[in-house]
Image (cartoon, rainbow over all chains, first blue to last red; front, side, top):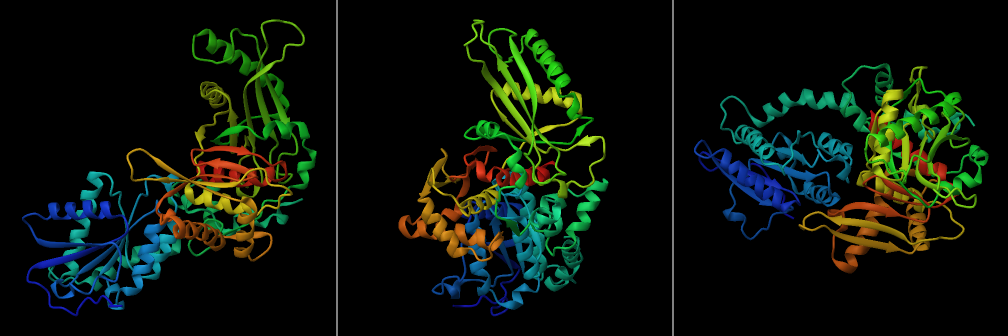
Length: 183
Length: 346
């Protein structure tokens, strides 16, 4: 049971690495392609996709340092929630200092929902991580989600001067607290 | 029976987040719900509900009328509060609606009323079809076409039926202004073109709006648990859950039928507090069924979507179609649907 740690490897020069995690494999792949497409020519980004944690140990030495983990779950399937829940214990606590976010898809078709939005919201609040929404099935929405993730990723990888992941988290925090208060 | 006897349907247990998500307006009704919402940490749907019970008022309903409502497939609609609707004018309304339908038919629109204008519209109240005394009375509209041959033994054919009701809705609807009557749930059986026409008439006359009520997979799993928990003397049909596999181009459905006694036994194992059901119990019940299925067929049902639930009490489809089979739990089923309808019109 290898715990995934944010700082146990040296960073690759000028490269940011994002790990997309979730049971919806096709959606993850499409999102990965969108991310690569969005940062073509501007920044070097590596996208890793996994369906669950822990990551296999045999190729551990080839794996770069991971700067941001995105847990993708679909409101439509309980299975995606279960896999995310099962993967979360394999992430080191220091990752939650701004290097984790939850991305929820399938929000627009509410009649299809198998999971209640509150379950997801509760999870994000428990892990003190930002919760993003975006419909990954529609191309334009996917592209904007990709843009957003790249921006977060660059901060997490330390490519933005004067702003760290922890900084970003505390910047996003007021909105987090607001949502808990409101509800 | 006053509302204090039905705590599970009062909003103190929270109001679904759907309300909160659309919480942008500032009507007094919404403000009231907002104050209620603050009491629960995450604004969940009622995380516990009462097991469907029969209401003491149900005894007032004519058993013939109940029998008429059972075993029919009803399409569910939600209805916003009606302006200046009066129970004393029902007779007048039936004349007006009949004239309206006849006029539409003359225009050549698709009104499926039979050959000629020989049809009758009746409004009648369904007394007793309510949870508490404060719920507005339910009423029924029927369109009966009279047969051409005026022989007396020829049966009149019911072309279209629709009924409006509100069961235990009063606690969620405290601030409806005086001029409005709120019957949030509308059930229709008959040609859809007729439903649309009658909907137009209601919209013009009472300034209200009809929308289809769809039931999410989340609420379907609640129904599965609630209806399994009902005590039945004998079970008519197997408990059946229908799951739809999303990925394939042509939809693939998996039907999962369980012996109702087995389902009840499983539920009794999961269920703890008598009289009420919690969200955890519902989740556990569905997860147990899914893991059993996974053990045998290696298919993860939790990755698919629940689209239909049918039990001996009632059967419901995610499209908003329902068939109620058991008169004993009629009120209980309607109470849950009323709750869903109220949350949808918000």
